[in-house]
Image 1: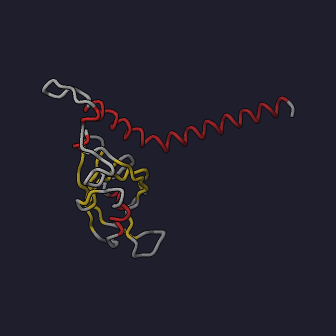
Image 2: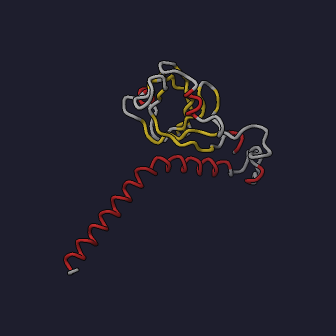
Length: 170
């Protein structure tokens, strides 16, 4: 290869690397807000209590895992919202965390997909949504899946199930 060809190949590789970095930043950007909020929550929880006694990290919250009697709290982190979907009409945006369906909290065993599948298209459900430090209920009328059978309920989001920190864990 001559020098010009080497330069062109090098420039093409640099452009591809920059494009990959942009796509990665776009995909992971919504997770950044979630991680930042969790770090802030953990730092505020590490502040001294009102009595002036600092609470050590291992003393906060309730035990989780195999010894815990209640299931660990999970959330559906919204990654993408389909334009014009029921979720879009309800005001759900990427970065929101859905923590319950009809007041039933999400767990590792009770995922958002499972709880939504218990309903039919046209059913009105209530989603408990957390965005930053704010939590509210959104009423959503489920649609029919555009890609599946007509009787499959559709919310119109892509999400990832993640463990979450609940009030008693801080």
